[in-house]
Image 1: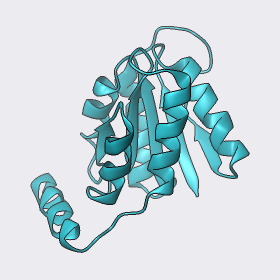
Image 2: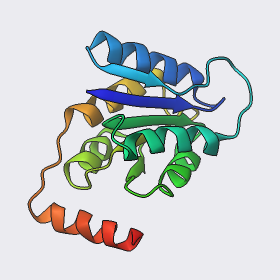
Image 3: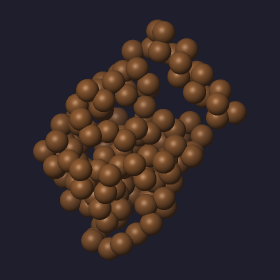
Image 4: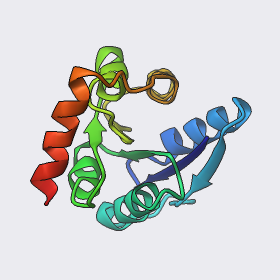
Length: 145
């Protein structure tokens, strides 16, 4: 599986740890930056990751900013993206299981690195359940039109 990842200055440590962790697990990781601790505008990174997921270049994405909220707001503007800002285990699993979310957004100032790794694992390891949830995801897709 190919996973796109990116961050702003509020999520560099977490992004780097997640990228390394996923590579160790055998995933192909496409890192859209940032690569050093400099202030950037998070919508630019969110757009790069979201476009790569929407186009099919990457199957899933992970974005990290200070709270995860800004990245999710920006990523969700891209057609076909269902980005979820998550800070605990239940939501990390169920956003994939029931919502078929394709981008996980995390807050580097909200959760620790260890929790971020656990949430990333839950997200990438959980498959969409489909069934009655597909109808609801289809309804979300209709809103985009």
